[in-house]
Image 1: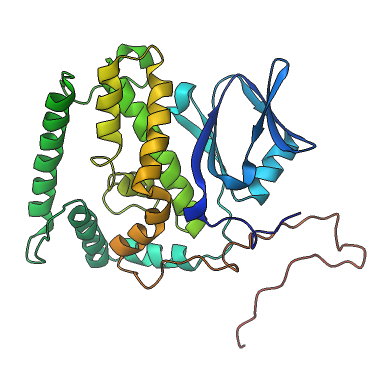
Image 2 (image 1 turned 90 degrees about the vertical axis):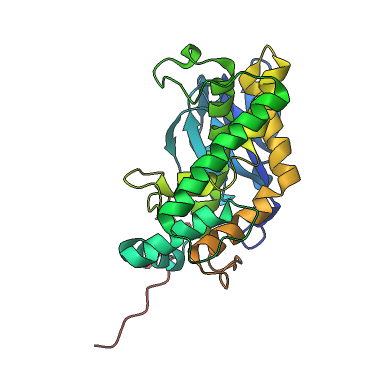
Length: 309
């Protein structure tokens, strides 16, 4: 079995794969998705996110393989739009999580990170003297201008962000396309956050949700990625809107080099630009089993170092 030392780094992986109406299982050649009489090979060691939609089943062996290959598994609604549950990341170090918790817990530092997150979204340099409230207002104007520009460019009428979580088909095509595109972006950001050892819940602008930090990070890219993709696909009026949005998102993420940029960008907004890499020990992800190394009464993990006294 390959170790996580040999696996591709997060920046080198593909973005995501969405599957529904089939069974994910391990076969002789690796991982396969069974639909009827056909089997589709799944490149398990190259994926960062596996999205399992309605009608999909997965075996214990498949989940084990995904875990060993540091691939986030997300159980979603139809077309990958709603997240019901997700697995944990492959990192075993808590160093970044502890640093993130300190930044969130101290109000002054939290506001500094929030300010950097807003500043990150602008192409021009924002002087440090600009207050958080001012830059937040500037961001609101920028987002509204982006919607107006892409609406005019692609000829898609924009009436505002409106959707009903309990009735997917109630939304108009552009709002459904935006939801589908953002779901893809959330999945990638979630996987990157967990792979680096951060918490998805400890947000700086968004707070109180288990995915608050995911929303914070995803907002860094929406005007560059998901908003243009959603309007462009909607303008073409494809019969399978959500599927086409997912395909175009994958292409846009690749062209933008999102996988390569994500972790350094997170480090930049957190103010820890000296901590952008991935080291083998942090991605080790020890797999402990009671079936190995127990004959002498010991377990196969290493004990933590004891402090003095």
